[in-house]
Length: 103
Image (cartoon, rainbow, N blue to C red):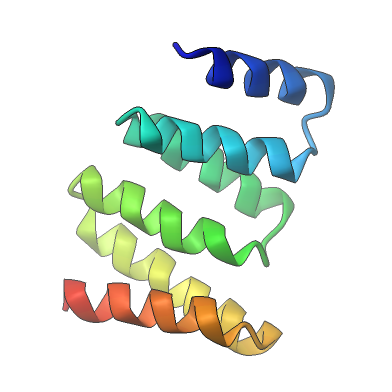
């Protein structure tokens, strides 16, 4: 496990509601080719902050890596609904592109 993952894990132990650390940990897991761990962190992040748009995109990527394509489609669709509601057009377009690629 990398020093970055260890540091972020320690930050979360002190403050489990720290969305910045949770997102950073999920991304660190993705960067180290640990998609299952990344997905768990994205899920935890979305449970606490259901409007965290980037978690939908990168969470979907983690699910794709795991071969869980139906779940990836569903998370992209949820993200599209959230970003439409919140007015985040940039992330919405990225989510739509990812969904279109999956077909």
